[in-house]
Amino acid sequence: MGSEGQQLHIFIFPLMASGHLLPAVDIAKLFAEKGVRVSIITTAGEEPAIEASFCRSSEAGRRVRTLLVEWSSSAIGLPDSLSSVKTLDMHMDFLMRTSALRPSFERLVKDHHPAAIVTDSFYPWTAEVAEEVGIPRLVFDGSSFFTLCLSDKINLSTDTQESSADSGDRIVIPGIPHRIELIRSQLFDAKKMRPDFPDVFMKMKEAEGRSYGTVVNSFYELEPDYADHYRNVIGRKAWHIGPVFLRNEDAADNAMRGSRTTLEQTRCLTWLDSKAERSVLYVCFGSLSRFTETQLREIAGGLESSGHPFIWVVKNAGQGNSSGQWLPESFEERVVDSGTGMIIRGWAPQVLILNHVAVGGFLTHCGWNSSLESVAAGLPVVTWPIFADQFFNERLLVDLLKVGVDIGVKTNALGELERETVKAEEIAAAVGRLMGDSPEAEERRSRARELKAAARWAMEEGGSSYNDLARLIQELWEKQSAASHART
Ligand code: UDP
Image (cartoon, rainbow, N blue to C red):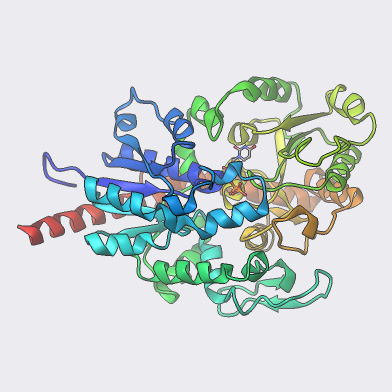
């Protein structure tokens, strides 16, 4: 570690979307606990939520602060956070114009002289900023090694040609450690989002290639073949330091994750306390996914007829052009008032719920954070991916880790109108397979329990993620001291 009086100071600059911001805050805590000073770079809109995540009375908490960036005048009108974006168009504007944050970010780097920057893959221009001032840039994109490897084999601009969801057009991903098969329409098609969106991905890939390395929220034992493949075959430097949220053993920290209030916490936990062990299904589709009213009604019907108690988190109920008819007739009286199901409209304390002893399964959209949170909670899952890398995570959970029941979604699309409707019968059947007591269901549970133990061990002193973080910090110290010798 550094000599007395010296400090290691890094910037962490996540994308302003829950799936990127929440793990970045946890990463900041991990670094701070090891004596590193951390500045989280964010916007004024996100700052209060980030500030609420740090206990300033602790020594580590005092090592973290926030510094603010602003959109330059060319992008005035873009919101402060991706989670608050309501339309697909604005979502795309946000992702395609992040370079409008560059002047403001550059000023911060020049004023504060961090030893390294950890920046989101959606800020490819930060690689140039790091080169200009001669410091390492580490990439954090919030995904798994598995996704990093598969994405490397798929050229987003040419491989994902037009194909209909039911064309049966299967492809096998070439050059990776296992045979992984997807349907073409399950691949993310950047072109479909906006004709020039593939250019953004090209820039991200190019910037990743010239950056110092990649920080991955995963642990070696979860995906050893892909951790090795990424490092040894693709040839990129990487550190696995997760599951990073496991450092939040404190219930208050977990309750506040991504939320500005703890209101739902008491309601949920009291309800869960009244349920039998491993009996409840938790249903949540992350922070961004929205559904049509037709789909919401099918989900309600499927959950009711599955006969298992559930907590269902609904993000867009009653919003926009919703007529309010998104629940089947008398559903609230039959299911909610009777205590069989609970609906959370808005934000749920997900990590707390997943780790409650009454929860026995998770119907998930397979966002990487949710996937890892289910693994660390030792829960089997029903997989219902929506867009982006979620279809890769589904294959990891179902084919390789063998803890998932695939519900059978075929279309990778963020827009709710572009996706096929999953019928109530299909939902009830998948939930039945997951929560039932067949030998396959028991095997899934037993594998999930093993993964939970491995995840926890990885973060303990001497565990694989613990050691990799220590190695990374040591390397950053060495780079900082080499740079300061070169200057003197
Ligand atoms: N999350 C939560 N409450 C919610 C919805 C999401 O705490 O109601 C958290 C969840 O625990 C996870 C993150 O938000 O840490 C979502 O990230 P993920 O990668 O799963 O999905 P995304 O939102 O990026 O699609």
